Length: 466
Ligand SMILES: C[S@@+](CC[C@H](N)C(=O)[O-])C[C@H]1O[C@@H](n2cnc3c(N)ncnc32)[C@H](O)[C@@H]1O
Image 1 (cartoon, rainbow, N blue to C red):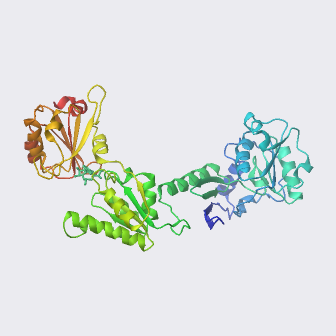
Image 2 (spheres, rainbow, N blue to C red; image 1 turned 90 degrees about the vertical axis):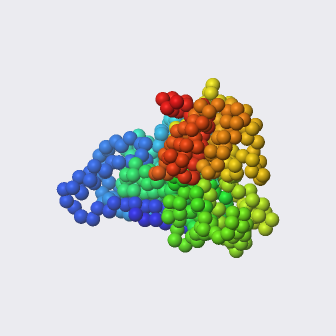
């Protein structure tokens, strides 16, 4: 495998992967391998005829010994001749147009899609003639006739024009790679005429780039600042593609206790990890310290990923960090995460809404008990709601909350699901009613983190338990 990478003049990054199976010795197995692939087209959607004609001098019978030299052609304003108007041409012409080439299609007939390109191409509605290649920089022989394709490649060879031959790559002088693009980067994969393998590798590389598993950490787009990354409920698979990418591109990751920790193991070795779960002093002081750390790191020119569980703004104090950054003139971007009050019940099979059962769901922090002087929740009003209640940070105060709801008139038979360690290997669901919740939490030794779902949706999910 060969990997070529380079920066475009505009700063975008190019990566080319070339994979070649070089057959270096003969023997029954390798001879069969060569024969089996002799007519495999480089364009994966092109049917492979089995023409019998002499090998072209440039694409000798030893083509399996050739290693293609990967290169990016700059075709803007340059004549490119495509001979043939079928599906191979239909796949190639739009990318040639996108590259700015002056595309000439030579074919008595073309597909409706090519015809529809109108003035974006020149269509010579007739059979190929050798002078068609005069002045061309690049050619594609893509007819369904091996004789015509051979004539094109010969004429191209005489004019020193690189030519792709779609029915038999070994008889051309250029191969078309499987191409993917992401974020200003072009990925091109060339295998030894194994187009499906090339496409699969192309997909794997592009997917890795999209997910941030493959990242150009020296990218010219390095911009200092803070990115708030919501990590989802805990399973590393449940972070967003954008979130994973931001983590992999960061210089510093400032991580919470509930952020998906397995992702931290994937960070490149030179990424600094600041574990704010271990910051000393009380809760408020720790948040001030977090604000100070992310601002300080960003002002030092680093890309900071502030990595949290769930979503940044659902009891995540994310906006305090935004304010701190703004006050310091530090740019901030936000990548939302799957928030636990919705995703954790969902993973456990409990919907927070269900048609005909509830028209609302209310998410409440239970970190303060009812009646606490700093509580902002009107539990008497909450008890009047008929929809789903989702309680977070409420394990400790659940008995007091259940009691307040019962006193305010909520039915003790209302079903309750307590989902602990949602999305983690230790996930479990404990069922209760509002009337039995305190005893069940005690008996089952429930510990945070947990989401407590109160409402008829729990009966919908567990009809046999109530
Ligand atoms: C400080 S809040 C952070 C919430 C987070 N920002 C979010 O959007 O999910 C922490 C609380 O979220 C809930 N929580 C977060 N992740 C959880 C999980 N994987 N399983 C159960 N509860 C979870 C628990 O109620 C926990 O006490």
